[in-house]
Image (tube, rainbow, N blue to C red):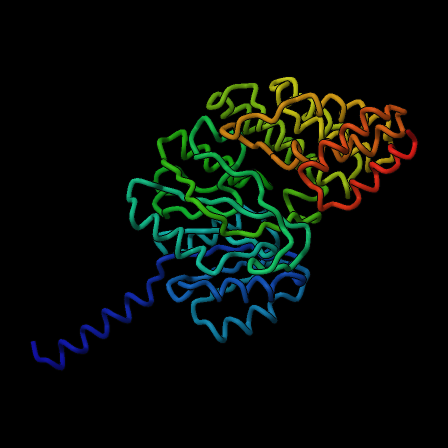
Length: 392
């Protein structure tokens, strides 16, 4: 072989390697005008975006997202965009994207979420180094402010997900930010298209049931936007609840019937959604009480209930729950979903507010003295205490 032929062959091989992406990012677009530009700016700034392909499928959106998508597609040849004539549902769209995907790793990206710049690099590197692992995921922040960036946001750390296993999957822990091997679908099938919002949870459970191995890597790499109009977080929660019940009936044997974290997480989701749909509160209350019944040494459900009744201007009802919550010791940190701030601050702050209206002045004064000892910097606590001291 001549040197010239050898050089041409090496160039062709190099071009082929570059043309074959390492990661396929699949994204469904519907009513995304508000998020599309921030999403594309965020994704294209990933440290290994040049090793990715972004497959964007417009599910007959009534919005004008295509204009922005075309602008980015002209700048980035690894953005692939198609538009459907009708909206077939999220998991039909994902399966269609999977049929086009060429990467050995797959990840889904939501228009309203934002990533750390090295998110994909970190997740892919773990899969590179651990051939036995089928899917990786990580913890995330949660925000209620649209279009914040990962670098600058007002979000807080969401529950720290446990290491994924059959026993821990009473909630869809990998759903916010998973990356998985494309070969997983060869073994366990595609997403079940009969689901509208919980099909990813069902897919991961099906894979785990079949022997797949998942791994949670350390660190926070995603800013999750709790979208009041989102498919799984919006006002269609009654449909999601029905789907979740179906999944629990099918796969619940993996973790057992009674599960504190499952009830508590479901209650929190409903609680946050009820701000836009108040009819969801009775259901949220029901799941909070179920969680508390399973673990009466955990105060989080009671504190969340007390918070709700404070927000509704019912301090006497809030006092009943806050008083009981204040009697519970903070559990050891090795338990799941322990929200320390609720124990060392929130419950005493609430009790300090509502005890006054319940004419339980000693309780209110004691609660405020307790919380001021750990948070002397919060001026409103001292002001509330002064009401009690002046009364004495």
